[in-house]
Image (cartoon, rainbow, N blue to C red; front, side, top):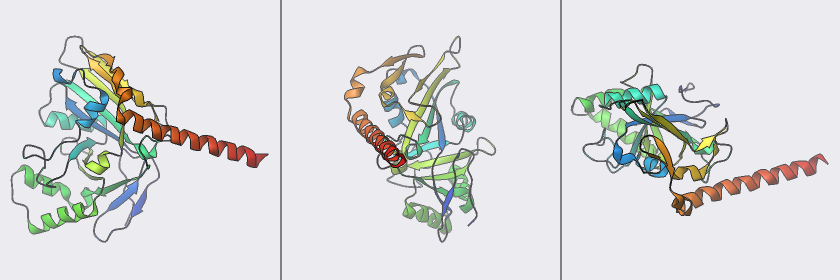
Length: 265
């Protein structure tokens, strides 16, 4: 199997061989998701907003019949692809953009244990043809169902497929266990339909190593594109769990530094 490269991948890639499916195991990805912003999203923390990206499988969701009983999340390879996808599904110019990364590839992870992503490249199994059939409400063939069942059986973190909204773009359909491997780098709000085109951003990880700022998941957007903070967030289980992992990693870094210093003496 030849190497597979995705435009939003920045690290060295490794391939897991599979008898019929192109299964990739690697890290160091950026992912983007764009949704239409509405006033009911004011006052929701980044933690709450991000949790809303994992959708229940219902009949009115995109491609919900593909993997029944699953909770799914839709992401893209770039802000341009994410915006094009949002526009394709009827979004206006008031947009909320999520910028996420695979937590396990961060120098300081916040999810334990840090793991690489397992991605099936749906472009190599003609997955887009299956999606087009669904959009046209056509009946899937036996071979189509076999491809879907093979994908589900492997339990990948996500499935990559070609964007119909932006030529050359790649979309990612995340399953719930894969979605749990994502952390937020930044959330951007742009009110393009509002006077003055108000905009703002909340950063939850910075520097080139994506150093996490777990407390920033308690930030929120307030009218009009201002930023507020929920002081109770640092009392949440999510915050304490992330901080446990951060502190654990910090201790390991100190231990490694001390051991190196001893060996150098």
